Length: 343
Image (cartoon, rainbow, N blue to C red; front, side, top):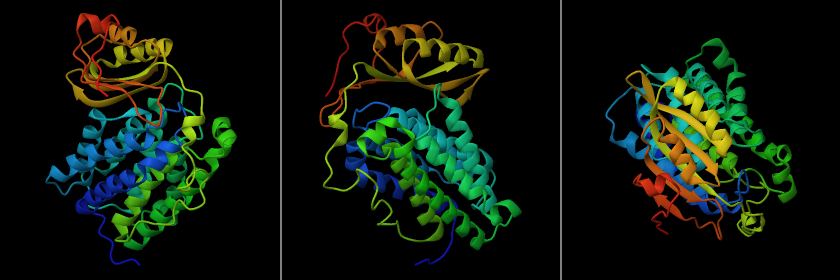
């Protein structure tokens, strides 16, 4: 039952905190159905850890500006993002913040505008975006919100925000169900997209925090592959060889565009997203799946010095990954030599 609507900075802090808890509670099932783009069984973990960074940053910030709050949360999440899903979650938060700067509460028109900005930015950061993923869920959530009369007519009432949030959720849930039909991999496995489900949980936490309501316990009932008795579907899928490389690097816009093209030649699932301006360039968060981490690091070092480097094996048994955290960029690392690993 609705108690009150307080879509201010404190409510958005509750949103991020509750989303962190919800993703943590659901991480095992999200891992179990994680089969696209690679069946490495870590989508739930990646979303949870990324949201944890966002929530912690927001909790420490003393501001009533909801745009400033989400911007800080998004930057922190971006610096600590895990995987495809975590990186896209970070992009979502940072892009959503842009039209909200200077506002102290969320309204229906602002929500629709923020979601639309976020979906456009999220599609653009991937070199090869694919429908049937969390991108499609975000896109449909934005469309659902924009179709509400309150969002179209500039209605900043609490009732208008409530209508828009609920329309957002209806559209997002329908989009999650459709993911099974949009990707052949998911169709064959009879399962919905893990990233899409995780993003649905994030949106439900936003709805609940803004409206003063509880999370929807029945939200995921009936989604294929999501019953607790279902097996870890990802373990049945072919395992890819190679690693996921993530890092932060300062580049000019021109160097960044050139780097994206070069990374496309070395791997797949390339994501490049600007974190913050630095001089005449930007700090960029880079993500790529590749068979040769050394070649990627060597390429990056031709234009800058990568920091906050992580290298994670794509193949997984029981959704356990081997990760290389905070790699010091020695000559051996740059040339693909032995890398100190931690389990």
